[in-house]
Amino acid sequence: MSSTSKTLAGHYTRPDWVRRINAMGDSVAGARRLIPLDADALINDAVESTGDLSDFGSYDGDWQARFTSLLEELESTGALNTMGRLMTRQEILRGLRTRLFLTRARSETPAMADENIDAPLVITGPPRSGTSILFELLSLDTTARAPLAWEVIHPLAFDRANEQARVAMAECEQEFWADVQPEFAAIHELRADLPVECVTLTLPGFSGGHWSMIADVPNWDADYPATMRYHRALLQALQHGGPPRNWVLKTPLYLAFIDMLLDTYPDARVVHTHRDPLKTEPSAFSTLATVRWQRSDEVGMPDPDGVGLGDMMVDLARRRSEGEFADSIIDLHFSQLMADPAGAVEELYSQLDRPFAGPHADAIRAYMKAKPKGKFGQHKYSAEQWGFDPARIRKKMLPYTDYYGVTLEG
Image (tube, rainbow, N blue to C red; front, side, top):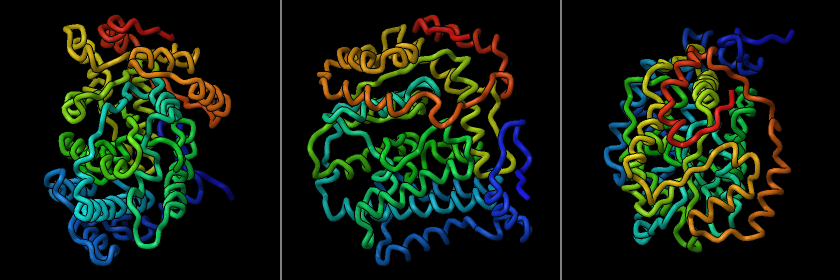
């Protein structure tokens, strides 16, 4: 007889097959007995799996110290269930293997480290403000290039795995998130052939936002300078030998370290998307809870009144009002993007002094027609559900909404 686990905050349920896998950990007095996350053992497994590779590289600093502290924190506070440990162990091993293959590639081809990452287009902004759809629309520009999920998840050939095999493996991993938590599909579509965020690109650095997104690790600090060093190294590897095209990149987390982004890529042009904080602030919490619920029965969440992306947007608005980033950041409002996607991108390109070709406009219109709003269901959330006071959000975010002239939706 079909059944589901107890819901989280009256909203989330689990498929039966996931509930049963999690029960396997319970049956042996804890999932960690079934699927261990030991740092030394994982490193040894990664080395053995590649045959003769043992150099994980040092281009992003002391990765091993970050890696060890991450695993210690995952065990201390992550509360991963059986499914969570399986997903996390696979990502760790994949990240370690990627480091080994990347280090070999840089050693065999020293010119790779000399690749210039010229004038990338970088999208940032709060969740639900149009960052993902804009990312996909800009990736349709044949004169630009976005990192696709399959080439980020498996960026370098290994064994006899050709491109087709790597795409197939990445497709399984990307689709798996929505298999484990069906509600996730309504929040964010994951496919091997879609552009992927920089949090996925930098996973093997064991320094960035992926790890604090998938689990509650409050005492583990992301190392954003190391994140950007790894980011550059991987982009150089992906770019080497190909035609020169500007990268299109994206993650809301760039709001947290925009200075480091611009230190790494001084000629980057940043597109900052904007939307009513009553839509974006609770959505960020709902998304985080959904992702963590995939891997844990005890979803630890940050204090809604603590420092978050909203505070960073307020601070960035203040800095821009004082004249900073005048030549680096361009604004795009969610309402404008949704009303006329092709027109919004054309206006954006005008501000970027970048030609906007007719085929790109046609591709945008065709893409939007094939991906109507709500195609995978509706992401349901509310401010009150996550402990937010709408009036308090309005007051806190007033410097942001006033400075940018953000349309208030409710």
